[in-house]
Image (cartoon, one colour):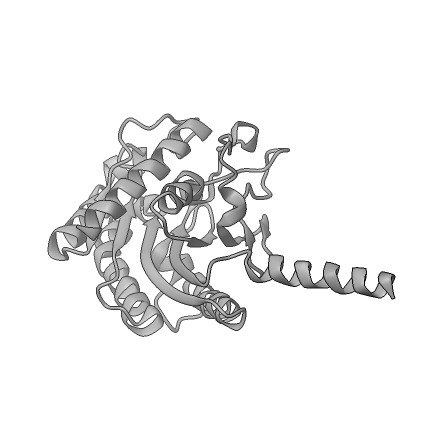
Length: 266
């Protein structure tokens, strides 16, 4: 009898623990893009210390195409599998921790592929590119959270990409329209919040971007046209090579993204 009661208590406390792993009200942040979103040269050996144990309180769902994923499940914030032995991480770490400290529970959805072009790889909505795959994953991820009993409120979209669309003058010239169309569809048809904040970023100092700066101009123009869109510069962030941020640069970028998000809330 005592043994059965002990098992019941263990099951009860396990149920309470798993039920409260995430708060009932969750704020969803959608992060997507190419290598600097992925954290291509951000070695997880330099993963920022989590002295306050914040990461275990932040739901995390990710797909790094060709490298690894959270297996279509929500886990908690952490480094991801990559070409470093310890893995890699992106700006989601410092961004997510900063949001958590404001009293909100951020659920970070991250979808990335290094070296990917918006036009050629992500493609327009309905054209069976990476974007359509991401949309399917977003819907599945939100459904999972709701099935667990959580109220989900999308809060922002963060897009770090553009260098691959600076490969040619034609691609860079078309970038504004491709990005505007994708963001409109994501906001209006997927998230169904036309004014949800959007944060854009691209490496302005990349050699191809300097040759075809229309990708930067496009992001800045969209930010000027829409009060709910912000552009975040990557100037001054520490780099490993001509474009990829180091762990230190990635950590700082996450802080810049959070600052931009805060400003969009005011």
